Length: 106
Image (cartoon, rainbow, N blue to C red; front, top):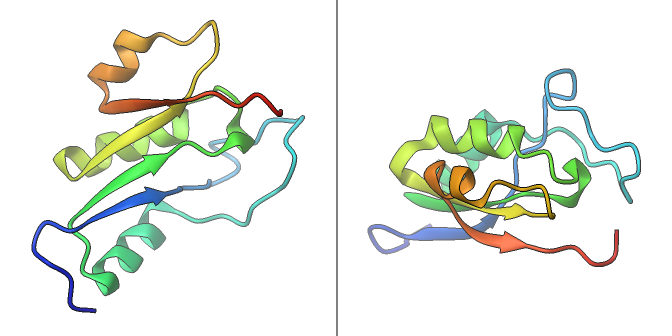
């Protein structure tokens, strides 16, 4: 794919591994695992240099999977986190989160 330098994929997810990042018991769906390595292979094929990780609802407000992926990706990525009244917005910002997702359905 021929994309401009610095192109950004603005909505990607990382799922799993389930043993390390358990899904919320009250989730609406169960996705297949999609590792950080899978994401990096896909982005390489697409020619994307940057990405926005959007925390999927299947983790509820557990940010572990997304925050670990953001840490591994460094300056290449930013995040959008599912937030609730217990979320530490300052800590999320320090980890690279720049957007909030409020899920009013689940």
